[in-house]
Amino acid sequence: MARTVADIEKRLARMLGSGGTDPVNELADGEAEDLRDLVQETLTKCFIPVNGSRPKWSEQKLALTFRAPVTLTIGVTQGSTAVTGVPTSIITGERVVIGNTLYTYAGNGALLSEWADATGTVGATFYQVCKPIPGNVSGIEAPVNCLEHGPLSPLMDEEQELMLRSYYQNDFYPLSRAYHSITNSRRYRSDPKGYDIGDPWFYYIDSAAVDGSVYPTPVTPSGAIQMEGSIDDNIEIDGLTYDGALPAHYISQRMYLYPFPDAAVTVEYRGTINPRIVDGTTALHLPADVMDACFMPMARYAVATHFPNYPGDNVALLRRNSEDGTALLQTLGRPQRRRSGPLSPAQGW
Image 1 (tube, helix red, strand yellow):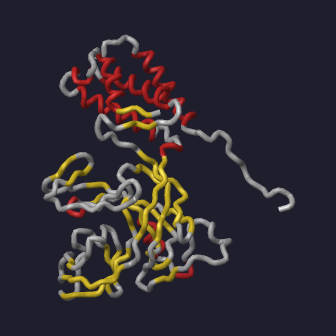
Image 2 (spheres, one colour):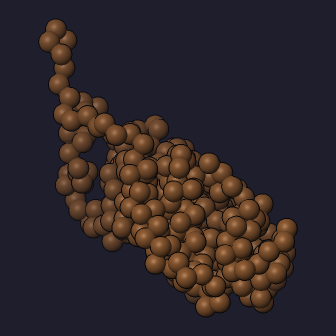
Image 3 (cartoon, helix red, strand yellow):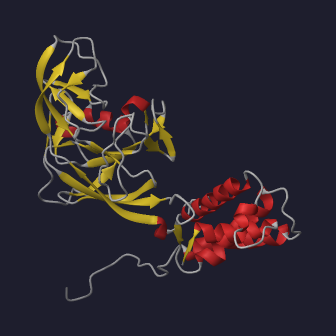
């Protein structure tokens, strides 16, 4: 069932004694903003419950396409991180191989570490090992599937990737044993400098903060990259418009692959979505009876306890209704009741 934010806020505003055809406008200064925040907070609790039992309908199927490596000539300066000649298709976080040395591209025409050799031009290969995931994705559900090569094994973080890169070539095994029964194992080759190039086996999500000067290129929910303008073009980030320096501390979630893909690959995954309210026309979509049986009781109790001028004397009743809605949310979040156990082929197969 779907309702607009404006309709929900109108119903909740009447709890505070407002009337007429537009009760939200009759609220005191600041109360309309607080009411919007409570609606967003309640929506988040429905999609990401505090008990950790996320409903399956809060997930969305998404995909990211990683570009094939690009080799080009760039300009470098001794003792500087600045590089020239990097096209806009190269994004923050890509690995850069110059000669036998591995660098990380920090975005905005800069490497993460300084160039130590002489100033001039050098040949560089850019490997797109990471892509930003949409900002409304709060988590990734396993398994993550590479369409060209099969499921990917999860790593905890970049530290585990470095651990894998420190092993000898013959000790390079996936974390799980899912591939041991496959006759044609996926190819890889170990570089003597300590990194592997070939078909990806692993993935991890890096949420390290990105400096404002290297704000990552955002992506749409479908995984397509959106091109950003310059910092003078009123860039909107998290609902705020910036006409100068970007935020100095911005958390960006990026999916990394390892080994470095030597060809274009597409990765499909399921992301846990936390919908964001844009304005009053935003429609909140919730399945079955979740809107009336869970969302609205939780929102009513939030209004009664947040606003000190709530005139009702039924807070205890609203609390019980909210607790019932929270408990019911876990049941309604499992649309598939029957789940199979171990499968065995029938006789004759």
